[in-house]
Image (tube, rainbow, N blue to C red):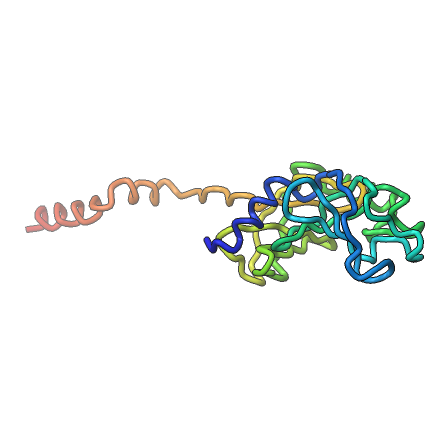
Length: 207
């Protein structure tokens, strides 16, 4: 496992995607209205709120030193992407999801916690150790550590979390069920030399 990803994996354990964290705005690198703001989470790495999630009017951006509540959106090397949950840090029309509240209620009933879905890998992002999965008309992004998935591959995934603020469904890869073998196949696996022995015995009896 490359050492360059150790900090990324450590941040994932400390700030899991979907968790709510409290932080303090520590800097506005390019000034209000441009890029976004940095957030001190009390432990490395720093948090980042993209300008798309902030008020449209730069004068309403949170000032350095303001404390707020955020949802963890994503991990990138050296950065935790955040979505502001405090209404004063967002614009009046800021939305992360394409679903309305009523539509989200339908989605959560359709995919309850623990449900299994069949999904296909549509994209892989090696730099973040993530891959995107589509299932039916929905999608989710899943983190991985060692084994990089293959685009186009399919598999079973389990619904592990509903994120109410950002209307996201979190999935984890589900282990494949063991293959059922026929009794004949099971006997052959248990006695791999049986067939050869029985053939030899028949040959002796025919002499």
